[in-house]
Length: 176
Image (cartoon, rainbow, N blue to C red):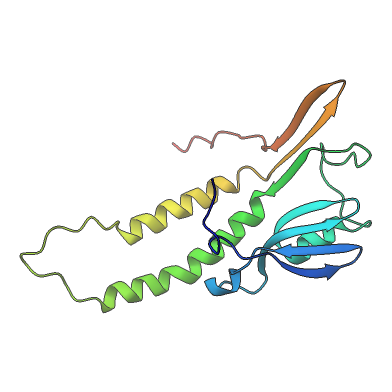
């Protein structure tokens, strides 16, 4: 089973990094995304770090890598899998995207011809309503600052620990 010969992803683009190699997912530049967006894998003798950004993966794979929150802070324990998501940074990136994209979408909508009177009703989503929903989702992301997990073997068992940081939520003061 599998893909016929000559089909599928081309080989990863390989570049040297300190004490290792970075394998970038091929074809990303064709998307027209920010050149810093470079999903791939940084491999050293001690680390295998997947990231969406080359510099971040390289930084994490170096001996002087940044400190990680629990349960990733115990670097003496070999891990099967690990992950960390900084939702605050994701929310900031999504907010920037929303502020960048929405004026263009509004301009495109203004430049379109109105539909014919006998045209079928459109099923296209209302862009203002969609932007409002995205803004709500961004606010929700900001309520959970981060998620971290580590999976390892301990006493012949596979253990997964995770930490979800959620600040204390307080009800809004009654405004009567």
